[in-house]
Length: 138
Image (tube, rainbow, N blue to C red; front, side):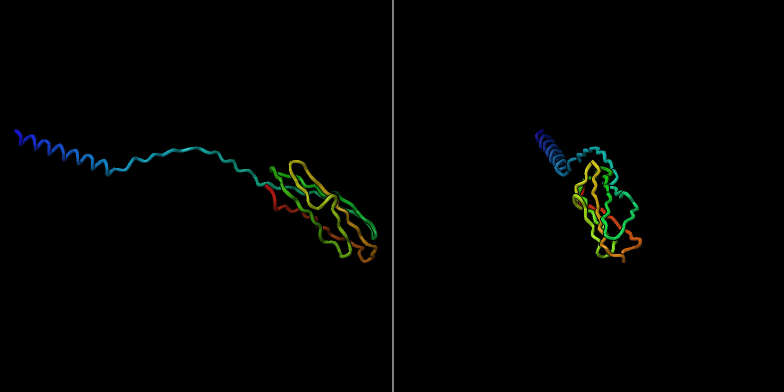
Protein backbone atom coordinates (compact mmCIF):
# COMPACT_ATOMS: atom_id res chain seq x y z
CA UNK A 1 0.00 0.00 0.00
CA UNK A 2 2.82 2.30 0.68
CA UNK A 3 3.98 1.89 -2.88
CA UNK A 4 0.66 3.24 -4.21
CA UNK A 5 0.76 6.06 -1.71
CA UNK A 6 4.21 7.09 -2.92
CA UNK A 7 3.07 6.87 -6.53
CA UNK A 8 -0.07 8.95 -5.79
CA UNK A 9 2.02 11.55 -3.94
CA UNK A 10 4.53 11.60 -6.78
CA UNK A 11 1.72 12.10 -9.34
CA UNK A 12 0.19 14.82 -7.16
CA UNK A 13 3.57 16.55 -6.87
CA UNK A 14 4.05 16.40 -10.64
CA UNK A 15 0.57 17.85 -11.22
CA UNK A 16 1.17 20.63 -8.69
CA UNK A 17 4.61 21.45 -10.17
CA UNK A 18 3.16 21.40 -13.71
CA UNK A 19 0.26 23.63 -12.67
CA UNK A 20 2.58 26.10 -10.92
CA UNK A 21 4.96 26.10 -13.92
CA UNK A 22 2.01 26.67 -16.26
CA UNK A 23 0.70 29.66 -14.30
CA UNK A 24 4.18 31.14 -13.73
CA UNK A 25 4.82 31.10 -17.48
CA UNK A 26 1.54 32.89 -18.19
CA UNK A 27 1.42 36.65 -18.69
CA UNK A 28 -1.18 38.75 -16.98
CA UNK A 29 -4.16 39.54 -19.17
CA UNK A 30 -4.03 43.09 -20.61
CA UNK A 31 -5.94 45.83 -18.82
CA UNK A 32 -7.37 48.36 -21.24
CA UNK A 33 -9.07 51.62 -20.35
CA UNK A 34 -10.54 54.17 -22.79
CA UNK A 35 -11.68 57.76 -22.50
CA UNK A 36 -13.55 59.98 -24.93
CA UNK A 37 -12.38 63.50 -25.75
CA UNK A 38 -14.39 65.97 -27.82
CA UNK A 39 -12.24 68.18 -30.06
CA UNK A 40 -13.70 71.27 -31.69
CA UNK A 41 -11.65 72.77 -34.51
CA UNK A 42 -12.41 76.45 -35.08
CA UNK A 43 -11.23 78.83 -37.80
CA UNK A 44 -7.87 80.42 -37.12
CA UNK A 45 -7.83 83.79 -35.36
CA UNK A 46 -7.45 86.69 -37.76
CA UNK A 47 -8.50 90.29 -38.28
CA UNK A 48 -9.85 92.55 -40.97
CA UNK A 49 -8.48 95.90 -42.14
CA UNK A 50 -10.70 98.71 -43.42
CA UNK A 51 -9.47 102.10 -44.63
CA UNK A 52 -11.79 105.11 -44.92
CA UNK A 53 -12.10 107.01 -47.11
CA UNK A 54 -10.78 104.86 -49.95
CA UNK A 55 -10.19 107.80 -52.30
CA UNK A 56 -8.67 111.13 -51.33
CA UNK A 57 -7.97 114.26 -53.39
CA UNK A 58 -5.31 116.66 -52.13
CA UNK A 59 -2.73 119.20 -53.34
CA UNK A 60 0.99 119.78 -52.82
CA UNK A 61 1.93 121.33 -49.47
CA UNK A 62 -1.06 119.75 -47.69
CA UNK A 63 -1.63 117.10 -45.05
CA UNK A 64 -4.45 114.61 -45.42
CA UNK A 65 -5.84 112.28 -42.78
CA UNK A 66 -7.75 109.03 -43.02
CA UNK A 67 -8.53 106.11 -40.73
CA UNK A 68 -7.54 102.48 -40.67
CA UNK A 69 -9.67 100.14 -38.55
CA UNK A 70 -8.78 96.59 -37.55
CA UNK A 71 -11.41 94.19 -36.26
CA UNK A 72 -10.52 90.81 -34.76
CA UNK A 73 -12.24 87.67 -36.01
CA UNK A 74 -12.41 84.20 -34.46
CA UNK A 75 -11.36 85.49 -31.03
CA UNK A 76 -8.18 87.17 -32.31
CA UNK A 77 -6.03 88.80 -29.65
CA UNK A 78 -2.59 90.15 -30.40
CA UNK A 79 -0.26 92.95 -31.37
CA UNK A 80 -0.80 94.62 -34.75
CA UNK A 81 1.80 96.74 -36.56
CA UNK A 82 0.63 99.15 -39.25
CA UNK A 83 2.71 100.41 -42.16
CA UNK A 84 2.17 102.36 -45.36
CA UNK A 85 4.12 102.21 -48.60
CA UNK A 86 3.94 103.26 -52.22
CA UNK A 87 4.16 107.04 -52.00
CA UNK A 88 6.92 109.06 -53.67
CA UNK A 89 10.05 110.23 -51.88
CA UNK A 90 9.53 113.30 -49.72
CA UNK A 91 6.02 112.34 -48.63
CA UNK A 92 5.77 111.63 -44.91
CA UNK A 93 3.39 109.21 -43.23
CA UNK A 94 2.53 109.33 -39.51
CA UNK A 95 0.29 107.05 -37.44
CA UNK A 96 -1.69 108.39 -34.47
CA UNK A 97 -1.60 107.48 -31.69
CA UNK A 98 0.92 104.82 -32.82
CA UNK A 99 1.55 102.34 -35.61
CA UNK A 100 1.59 99.50 -33.06
CA UNK A 101 -1.39 98.53 -30.91
CA UNK A 102 -3.02 95.57 -29.19
CA UNK A 103 -6.17 94.25 -30.82
CA UNK A 104 -8.68 92.19 -28.86
CA UNK A 105 -12.44 91.91 -28.71
CA UNK A 106 -13.04 95.57 -29.58
CA UNK A 107 -12.05 97.05 -32.98
CA UNK A 108 -9.02 99.34 -32.89
CA UNK A 109 -7.94 101.94 -35.34
CA UNK A 110 -5.35 104.53 -36.11
CA UNK A 111 -5.40 107.83 -37.91
CA UNK A 112 -2.92 108.04 -40.76
CA UNK A 113 -1.63 111.49 -41.69
CA UNK A 114 0.15 111.96 -45.00
CA UNK A 115 1.99 115.20 -45.67
CA UNK A 116 2.85 116.16 -49.23
CA UNK A 117 5.68 118.65 -49.74
CA UNK A 118 5.32 121.73 -51.90
CA UNK A 119 6.46 119.91 -55.04
CA UNK A 120 4.50 120.08 -58.31
CA UNK A 121 6.35 116.94 -59.48
CA UNK A 122 4.07 114.94 -57.11
CA UNK A 123 0.96 115.87 -59.10
CA UNK A 124 -0.68 112.66 -60.32
CA UNK A 125 -2.37 109.55 -58.98
CA UNK A 126 -0.47 107.55 -56.37
CA UNK A 127 -1.39 104.24 -54.80
CA UNK A 128 -0.85 103.95 -51.06
CA UNK A 129 -0.71 100.44 -49.60
CA UNK A 130 -1.70 100.24 -45.94
CA UNK A 131 -0.60 97.04 -44.27
CA UNK A 132 -1.47 95.55 -40.87
CA UNK A 133 0.70 92.66 -39.68
CA UNK A 134 0.54 90.52 -36.57
CA UNK A 135 3.08 87.84 -35.69
CA UNK A 136 2.37 87.86 -31.95
CA UNK A 137 -1.20 86.64 -31.41
CA UNK A 138 -3.19 83.84 -29.81
